[in-house]
Amino acid sequence: MGYPDPMPTKRLHIVDGESTGGSLRGSGLGKSTDILCWKDALYTGPVPTGLSLEKLSTLRSKFWTAGKRKNEFQKRDAQLLTWREYDEIVLWFGSTSICQLSLAQILAWSGRQKLGQRRISLIAAYGGMLRPEQLHVPYEARKTVTSEQVQLATRFWRAFTSSTPDALQRLLKANLLPLPEVRHTINELLQEYPSRYDGFSRLERRLLLEFAGMGTATAAFAVCSVIRRDWVGDTQLFGMLRRFAAAPNPLLTFADSFTESSKATSLIELGSD
Image (cartoon, rainbow, N blue to C red; front, side):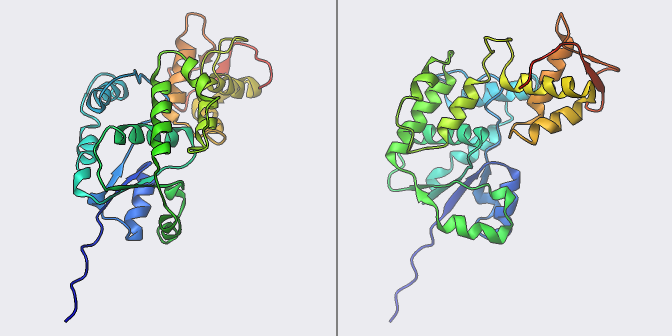
């Protein structure tokens, strides 16, 4: 007489966006109801320290919707809180700053939960850039998240949400090997503080250089040129352009009212990047 098959492992997949989520659904590795897209470009907008997930999500929702809604992340957070229904939580996050910040947020959150024997595993791959059938290789190679990784993610998250860059600078001197991509992310974050040379952040300067090099260009062309080299959101870059044009001493002048297709001319001179 044979024994019944053991209960299948139930997994919650937390992914870096809709692109990875779509590939994952097509791969057969996860059902739509078991895939959570963690969408929040944390490198822009307010991320103050010490807030619960609920309070931070409310603040972020107001930021992204210009104060119109406070529940933009309510469904996302509600799905995260179903973790008790799962045996394993699989995290799909690559090496970009946006992925590393989301990973730090989730791991720091997990460190405050009583997960028991539940496994948290990490897949450091861009699922959205792979065909559904290609996801099986990184999935089978996933690694269990260690306590050292959770501790480092928690330190990184606290440093990131600090009101000054001091904690990030100190963290660069620590052992970052448990999460090696954190070092590059910290360096990028520090470069977004105003430069002592001209007051611009790295991305602001890069965006202005696009106009300085061409004289006149459309907003969309300049933004796309930056995105080809930096994994950042276009919303952040278009916001920079609006601020440049609306400044008391404008850095750009637009031929018409601002739109993505508006042409702009640089009003300042910059040195090389």
